[in-house]
Length: 152
Image (cartoon, rainbow, N blue to C red; front, side, top):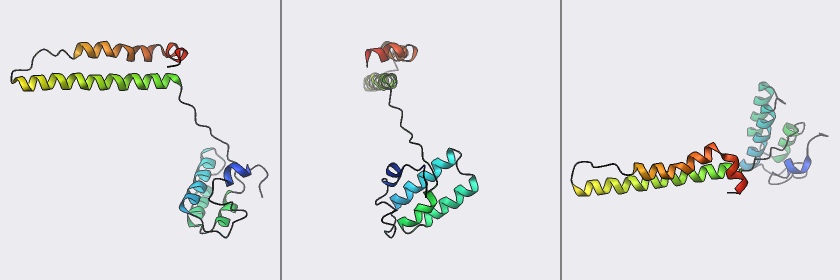
């Protein structure tokens, strides 16, 4: 039916191969896989909006796996590998989470000491450790290549 369709990657994602187990009832997960393939084909420009709607309606109404084969048979789905999270993203994410955690901790300590003392608000000392611990965050955003080379 389709020469260009990669048989294994697509059809192996179903609970059973629709070509050989066409009479088996389709599960919601099977319909989700088929809808994902049709949506990917639409976003790649392989289907127009009318055909996309028709095929999607057919997928949602499918009772058996065999009903999905004609809806997907002529669609070639390009594998879309997820980009790996780069060390730069990990460093930036870790830096901002660390800074936020410390900022919350410093402010809670300051707030509790102020509330428990019963006096007027006093000197806001958390600003200094927040600035000091914010420097690595700024460095991670300004110089990401240096962080990635270190392998952090």
